[in-house]
Length: 58
Image (cartoon, rainbow, N blue to C red; front, side, top):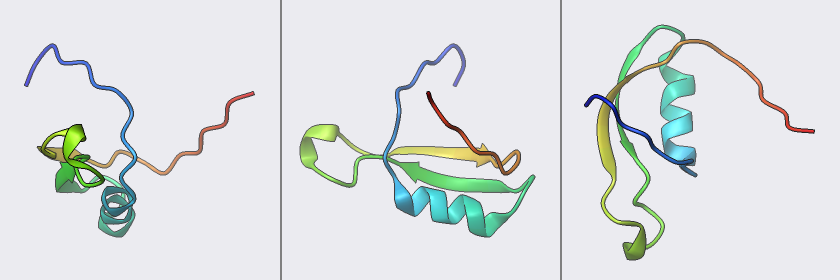
């Protein structure tokens, strides 16, 4: 895909896959679409885990 924007996802399963894969790994993910039918189908993607990071908002 090119020129795509996407919102936030709440997907603990995908987070665990990324954590397990390790930094720099290519990961086949199914993002979102797991909590209720109204959210649609999961987005399937080949993703790269870049690095460990933390985020905080003030």
